[in-house]
Length: 61
Image 1 (cartoon, rainbow, N blue to C red):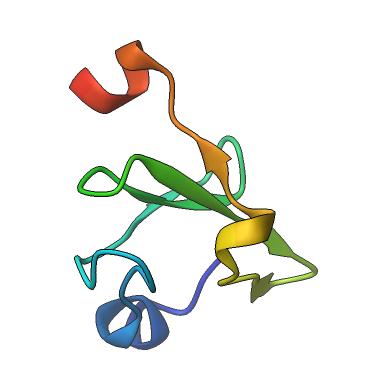
Image 2: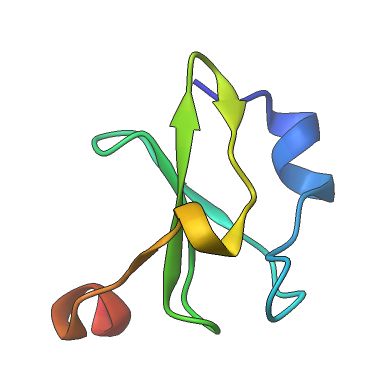
């Protein structure tokens, strides 16, 4: 789980857009850039090289 105050201040390093926490996949999602950043041991890994591309369905959802 990500601290809500932390989530309020974090933005995507690529698009600078806000992030949404996906609890099921334990990652931070940016629909603007189409990237999902992993959360490892409660720590967001905000590196573009560590992010995965969202699928078309995820971008629409």
